[in-house]
Length: 160
Image (cartoon, rainbow, N blue to C red):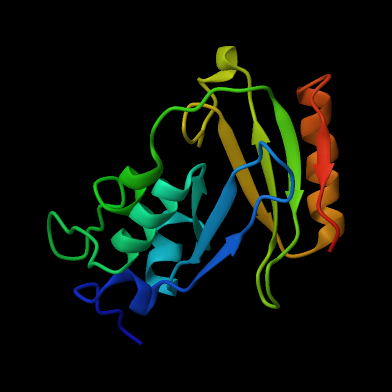
């Protein structure tokens, strides 16, 4: 079924909010990409790391608008919803496993890296990397893997 990208994002990109479960953690907003987009980008989800209420409001407003398209079929998330949660972030490293907020959503592992690790691939806000997992055991294994890469960083697990 074709996707009408001229409609607001919220019409074709279902989202779920993974609320911070400890002080100092950001919220995650995860969007499930429609198949044509997920195939093209090689990922099933689009994620935003939200640190403030103002960012939540700005992201919600961006999801109520159509996504910018510099040319037909080319989606510009960077100047659309990504711009609402793009300010560089600093803080202590951690690894956090977020439980799904509702049935049908994945587990998330969010890691915050020290400043000297900024060159990592797929890093957001100059410090965060996240991955989605269908099963809790897979997410726990990833959290453990990251804990080895970030010695001394706390590993925070949300009860499912």
